[in-house]
Image (tube, rainbow, N blue to C red):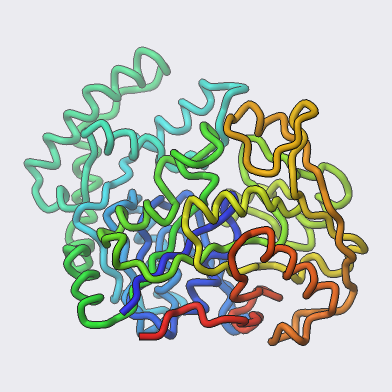
Length: 430
């Protein structure tokens, strides 16, 4: 039975949570394989809005087992706050399972994230300040704390002491902050241990055994392709690999078990934080997309930068991830625009690029070259088949599909779970 990966194809906020939720009734496990509480999903179910930050969107489907994989960094305070919020709204969170190998975001990671960002000044990356980057740095530097360490106080104390030996030198001597006490951190982390214990399992065994039983496992990547630390617009990226390959690592599922890779693509482009953005609009149309699309970050509350659709980015993302299908979201936001531009090339100092430039310098200086399609004024929020879309909307979708080199299998025409046109089945048959 299939393992399916959902991946953002742009800079995040494409609607991955809705796509996961759309498939929720047909899958058995939904896994978050990377990231932390630095990125969120907004999911609307029967008119009720849920904002998820650390928990997989599958938590909203009663028959799904939601899993936080080994590739995630977990802020325990944020985790239990989110669980409490969902519990208060009648959502069953007892099904949640967490990898014993997932790393923990400690309070000193958040402190370092904030002071480092301020220290960078004009070169600041625009992080959320949630401590995600420093937690991943400790993971790679072999100074990290894993979830399983909370069940062995001696090991936990040794690891905190080792981490703070370095961190306190930085905080006191470089950033003029007070030293962090080992006891304070250890006691704070241990306070979560007993609540955490029933949720913690060997998720590699759990998920691979589920696949052996012919159950469906869906991996829901956080962030997106162009925030990937290897393939994104470095250094304006996250600290993990939110691509299809990264999902295998972050969930502990081998690549030969993946049947579908679904790319989530917004019908225009948005970005939160700093970094190059060739199609960004700083005019009335940028404001129109921001306002009409409700483009505000779930986690940060920051307005998202908005621009026209960038076909070069999507084609490159398709190659990196090996998309088998695309879910196109927020097509309804373009309703009422007389002419809709699509970026099909870049002009870099007089040289035309029809594929993504190799260097960040060229990407930073890229000027979009557009082709323009006629828009539509009809309300499409009630459309449930491709044929019901206005002719110009169908032509826009067809052109995006042609440029992406991958079929568009579903189209979002509104925020709710039901506001979707299904063109092809997103799950392979058994």
